[in-house]
Picture: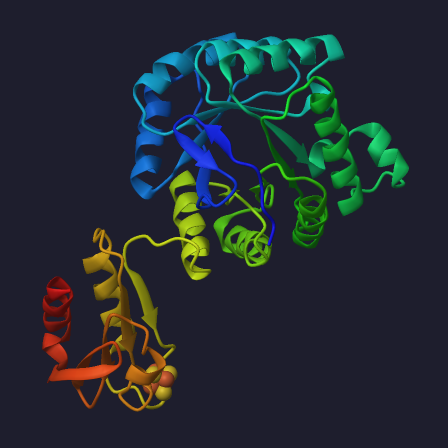
Length: 348
Ligand code: SF4
């Protein structure tokens, strides 16, 4: 088990025994306060627990204060190259900043950023990315991005901050290559105790990005590595949050709302199961109760396969057998399954 130190990001704590948190990043122009707040609010509703915004210029940095006043989750300012943007973001109330210490300018400038964060007691995420590895690290590995190169870069940057007496850190070492991401995080988890933010960077559109992220993030979380996660997808940020939660729920690391278990159907299925699953999913999407609902195709294996479900239905011959924790409670006609199932869920 990898134990990390506890770090505070606004009112949230990560690391140690704290739950793994779901993060996302706005794809709005941070200078457009209205649009950014609107997106953050939507993401909050989906369960986003920490939000990152890109700070490209002073106007974006100055927008942070106004954005923060209207949202409820900690805000991370993402800065590249210009240390003044980092300092301004801290001044404007960012709860954490994400920088790549190697590209923020001279040591003197980095020291100024560190000082600003120390004064406000806010953490820095050292964010190493396969797309922006330093030249000296690349040269060492024949200009190829390797897991060891990612780790070398992270350790170098961590040491830089530690030399400045700064230890309020979160670390990420994301690669577009899933296998590299897993290897790199496994290596660094053995070397440092700072909380780790997990992600497969530029994972692509949802069709492939969800799979890459689930494998990369999931493989690490399953080993006890990772304190915050971000599923990075091209397109809708809300989908990132939904998938992030599904990963955590799949590994039983967090609970949130209803978990639906359904079978793939086979020759034994005698009801329209796909339609029923769709209806159940829609009907339960806003339920906050943390329950597991099984929708199974047949009574032969259904209740047994879904024994751990709080409530469920197994299809019979144009009928539905409602069961609770593996025990049959009643049999209803196919047309009444949804209604009866929802009735039983209400009783839970
Ligand atoms: Fe087939 Fe029944 Fe298993 Fe569904 S639960 S896959 S219908 S055996």
